[in-house]
Image 1 (tube, rainbow, N blue to C red):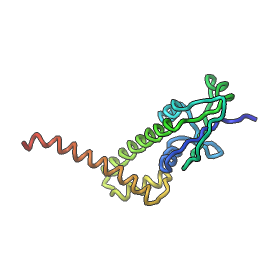
Image 2 (tube, rainbow, N blue to C red; image 1 turned 180 degrees about the horizontal axis):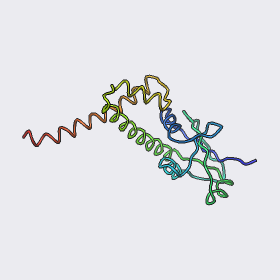
Image 3 (cartoon, rainbow, N blue to C red; image 1 turned 60 degrees about the horizontal axis):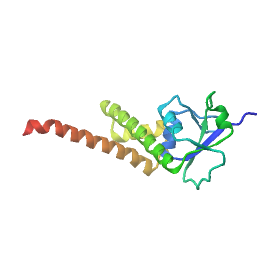
Image 4 (spheres, rainbow, N blue to C red; image 1 turned 135 degrees about the horizontal axis):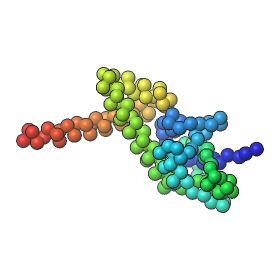
Length: 165
């Protein structure tokens, strides 16, 4: 019976839902981590290994990943413990948050171009990404749109400012 290599890291809940939409999961519900995606490559770049099992603090929101092995890492991962240190975990969260915001920006642009309301777009995002529809996640997505709209307004002002002076 083959054993699988599992990595557990702490992710904010909406980021876990986002990853479950963007990446595949195995029969146990673990997110499959491979180097075929940019997110997978980024997470792989922060994986550390040790001969001894690292001491993990209690995680607020643990998310399990199954690490796909290949000819290069199979022997190494089979006999070592995989983990991500606290700093690497923060960088992973930041990267996934940036990917999430980029994807949301594109969805909002497409929705607004089709004359959808902000509420309709947010509800579609919550449903499509299976993000738990609670006030926190609704406000997270709304805030992301607000920041993007603020940047658009600032860019527009900077474009028309020379004309007005």
